[in-house]
Image (cartoon, rainbow, N blue to C red; front, side):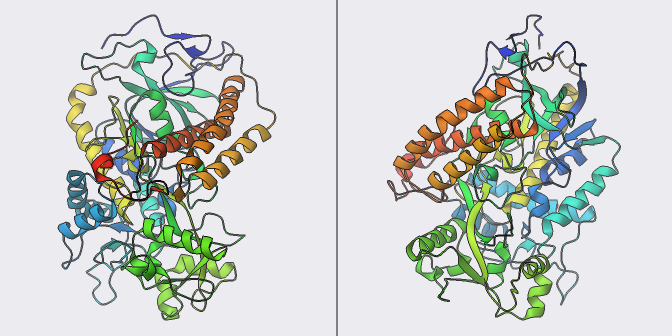
Length: 565
């Protein structure tokens, strides 16, 4: 690689700016230059980021940045479990077929096969780290495997309804004990460091390179984090919508950064709405696990009538896209504010043991799920699209990987099968490590270029937070009302027009004001909203999670392919 002396930045903006907003580089002369160098920069502290960090630490120094506390992840909140073929009466072929059927024809079969076949080994690795999954009461040598919607067998390894918490804390314990891993909390990645925008010649293969990221620290100073390999493990984008099961950190940061850097993104129209989010004025983002239906829970309306068999022969064990649309239809036709999930017919002792977190949380809100049904509504839950990657987790930019919900690997297709997300995260962390280990003899010796520091230019401190909160609320309401479970071309066109001035205002804020975490996140949800709408307008059919009233049928002749932008 060759480094140029004449960088491409002028007056705080890249002359060769890529997609989205201009890249602002450099620092005011009065500020201290902040630079950090590492071998592996991991952005995000969920299952994929932590799993990769533990393995990459064998090769070199790992710096893991996470935007809030290290436990503030979607992984930590995951209730159901991790899907893998762990029982004698199950098979790889059954798991593959369930995944393909759920994915509405868009799953990449080779990827599904690879992930499913790697699943058992990755689960055993987690167990070797001291992560505990529930054992069978009758035979403690076997796991107590659960079943969820879309699965034809019991294959969900779980820790009751606190599986994500168990995995997150087990991985964090291992990371804390590793001297080669540095974890920096309250550090938010702003933009990626791309070679062609830093005066580095693009290699002969024509593929641009990533050399790390600009990172906003807890003191609101942006530092330059240079790295040989950058891992986007930043999670999904549920906060683009008004109602979501996601934690507050889910603002699509990794996808937005990768797109602005020039990486390909794919299938962003496929936003999974979880059918059963707790409906209660004092509950925020609380998910009622898929496993409740897996253990016999029935969806009923306000009058006590079960309704799922009207929509799918699998009834309450249908896949999430089908169940979410069924609930949406029932609520619109009846005018009811919610539907109900009833598991009260099961023994109280079983419910309390199998779902201790759900039981206690509902009870604290005055709902005894052993005696009465749970009020539920659909809410934005999972982004099936993301940064396009290959089977090793590599993006279309060299040395930039994307793992977990930030990625689009081809596993989920048009709809994710329940509990395949934690599976994907841990399998692709291993795949990425295998690739890095192969590349390391050469990559580990290459020098990193000197890169220009961040420059806020004439930006001033933002004194009126209402400028951010108002736009944040506008975007999320527009997306919920116009780009939800059921869509139409007219509504998508309208929301694109209504979003345009909001995005223009955010662009102006980004240029005018010093960065804060809220402003960075606002910029990213605006970017994701635009991308979701754009992908939804491209796909003129109904498939999986993308239902268009104008095109109600699946159209394999024209749309049996990924939406790549």
